[in-house]
Length: 561
Ligand code: DON
Image (cartoon, rainbow, N blue to C red):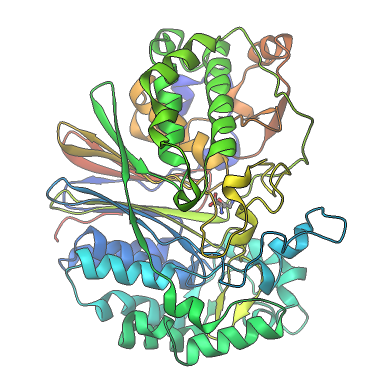
């Protein structure tokens, strides 16, 4: 079905195998869930089916992903929770990790003053104070309907009774094998006696995690404020050279932040404000593209690609230069999206130009998909768009004694302002490592509102490619007029400020387009995949939930709430 749909539009090019697999996708009107993992999606649908609202289902999905998708789902990480409630009010709950009280600006620099990447990426020193449990608790306190215990219970069952490891679960364990096996608990849980990852189909039970989740179900956020889970975790951190302390957990607070809401040709785009760069990025790019005849040029046209690439590159420059934790900001954010500023940006954009970055080349980087996004809508029209992460695959690759991986979100800070991090992002002192601050993020949960109704819920993992993936789904759907499925499946590209290459999925650029872009001086690099979108769209008052056909997610709808 999807192969047929894509072939109609992009017929000159063959489809790679992964795109030929049909995305699970159904339509109905009462509620829908799309996530990166089938058991977690089912948990969300079950909660909707027994009368839970979108927030309830989202909380249950978050906890389920912490069990069934240890690669990115988490208790030891954090994320962004964007809600448009049934009354039409929008909320952004930031439950991102925070630099521990003992963090120091130079803590990831070597004696020569240069960043030591391993310190901010691997092991306990790389761990920020996690926000996942306080975040879910806060969402429940504010907007939940069903009892908390009922929302955590499915995750308890999945951890205690087990779930079947799928192919991507095994292969991601394989990829991170060597580093993961260095952690005794991870080696015990996910690898056999010979150090091989558990094979696909294994019933994976996680008793330590089940016990932790039982405590969370019973005690709520208090389980993560103090007590055995925290004490053991802090002791493990200290033993591993980390700096987490008991007061870090006691003091962690999720933050309600402003929602970035802007008009895009009669639609309202709802997105996250800093420490997410998502809202500012989208407002800048969509605003600066306004007035160019993208629709007339079409999706498969070198002018569209180059112009969008120029616009995203400029927006990344501002992102990296100006954004960070709002606590450190000393200017008015509105300046970055002011109409006259975007008009000037627009005047500088040309589909015939490649603008070379004004600095040297940073380290190369590879895109990963180690974050996860899920989208939920309910029968009352409420929608949750939530992106959550450990940052790297299995985070810092250390497990808390309570059976969950810890994030390495500290690497999202600029360890040394002006030097590239693992995503090639060269960021400024606004994103320096400062105790109590939250690192700048590319996570970009979005909700689109048309005629006062939720029209789309979108998000993706992928580090900086999150921003360009979400942008392209918006453009595909609303500018290029694609169906919902095509908008998610259509091949993508990515350009940030540095490195200056335009990365593209093979089917995005024909040979002629590649030649043209190269003739402008635009360096190109092909990638297997960019992004993993989990989205929901309203189609004629019915929901269509879509899990990106590139990967193994699952989407579904519920008919009887
Ligand atoms: O918040 C961020 O921008 C990153 N921690 C997201 C990391 C991510 O998507 C992992 N995959 N590349």
